[in-house]
Image (cartoon, rainbow, N blue to C red; front, side, top):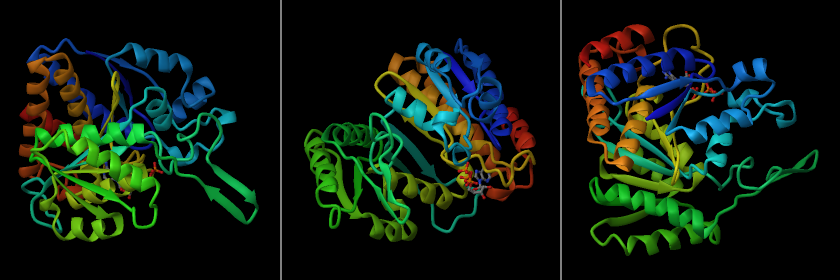
Length: 350
Ligand code: ATP
């Protein structure tokens, strides 16, 4: 597998170093034949190349088997004409990475507000309320007058159908349950299409049970009893918000790994942002990046029928469980170690 690795902004270089060390370790242990090529995007690229991402970088990523992307300082990138392109959007849109898979599970040893749970949020990634990706060119947020603004939400049957399929396929190899999250009581037409497509796909998976919740009520249900959920599927923005909540409920946003997957390409990326408040302080939890790397290995292993990749991902998960259970982790999950020291503790168990 050839992986392009981009450390990203803020805490990215610190957390990515741990993920890269972990990948080197499993590469040796499981003889994966993994090749990692290091690249830049975000602020580094803006300084050195005049744009946060470039067409040359995209070509490299297209030719590789996967991309491990660090967090990006999205909020800093406002003007595309000045090369300030949102790299996450750029890769998601250019590579049609329509499914954002965001697992959230509790770990023995981490105190949480709830009991144990293990769920996955499957979030649509290419349309919805995201002004920078739901139109072919331009932006779907319009300033009509200095005091009036309009934001458009695009929902298509095609995108709803394929995200629903991702969710049901995942549920079929998990606990056979899918929850649809929507606001069809208000957004009758758009979320009507979303629900309609989900129910059509559900017919192909008779073994999978289905329920649905209005997004606001869902917040209460997921806080009260997250264990009742298996796979949760939603449109882009609802899924984005919900998955930060589920990551935090699992102990910390620093445990929120994610995979952005399309038919041909995949990108592992922590669910959180660049966390400038703790950048450069050896405080960030590296597990979100490590989980994202392991998800890339699983994706490649399933696609190419390579059991060694699946075993490597499993070994990473088990090593993480043991490291957390021993309390050898960062402060956000109850430990007292720094990012680097957490990485050392994890490597010891691999
Ligand atoms: P951005 O503008 O890049 O989205 P942000 O700070 O607004 O950055 P996040 O990066 O998602 O948003 O951070 C939200 C909060 O979660 C911050 O207080 C941050 O310190 C914390 N946080 C995020 N990631 C981690 C991590 N890996 N380990 C520990 N804390 C984290």
